[in-house]
Length: 477
Ligand code: GLN
Image: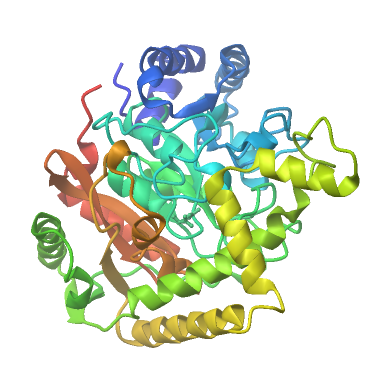
């Protein structure tokens, strides 16, 4: 059995009875048990429950009741609520929290027959770029165990790259699907804001958070997207389905390209992206030079807004309703203080302190208002850009996976996100697809679409993958 099969291939194996869902799930469970001590990509898996679900999927297959995912295991990032399962956001504070309900996308996947396989490791509360801030320990990149998988959906990216599951969910607030996808050589899709429900996805920065997927191929991402979407009355920002504004898929496209993005990148990475451009040109697409927004200004806007929203969202974790509570507090004030100082890790504390300051009246600069103005400028610039081009091509990340012991300081770590955060500030869809290896490590290229251009970039990525084989490369585990 080959662990690197697409959803379509697995569907075919199951429907033609070459394998049962139980055998398939047992195979992935065994593979995970054998290799995941090395990568630490999963934080909770209950094999007996997976197999029980698989047996009931087999009955459904026998009866011909078939979703596209019936019998196929799907992993969820640990910030998606799964009923009855620990949902910890990889934080000590939520290490005992059992979700009382399913997130909408979790429900949509299981309604289609997908088997809940387990929870993947992540940066604490999805704040990070390296998956080193998890309370359950860092994830290691299957391509090189001394390196990070990227973050914050590093567990999901590593799990798909290592062939433990065919697909996994992720969340992307400022690049957390696309950057780990680039580091791990998988396909990472972040849809338009509002197209997938945020209900039951534990909030980091609500105006930026978006669910999405890590998969082997763009075609798999498209299948998952179709299954996961749909208007959700429980999420006020969920797109109404009666109002389908999808940009129509067309070919060939005019693709925007900004040479200024590549100035400080390693020449081997630039060469891989240039080669992708050639491939796209051979497919008939036209390139046009465009000017994109100053990446560092966009980054400042992102970090101010995301920290401010996080400080408000995470105020609910005070030891009263969710997760762990300090044992020895003498007053309510002490209970809050002790629970939060013992429960949150350093990176989360850093952001909550910064966010609270940005929001306070004592902040003379009025950071948040300035950040919102910048955000609007980025948005306007992209709106204008998409008058002339269909899609923008950009790097997914400025480097390949760095080493765990490299100890980037906070600013260097934050600058890792400079190619991804503008997309979240504008609510746009984007996909990262593997475009080569540099020193035997994968690197991705990003296609950014206009709002509701999800199907357009999925189609472009699919055509790109039909011409290239980078997404088929595998790490040696
Ligand atoms: N790396 C970014 C951050 O640390 C993005 C996180 C995310 O997308 N969840 O904020």
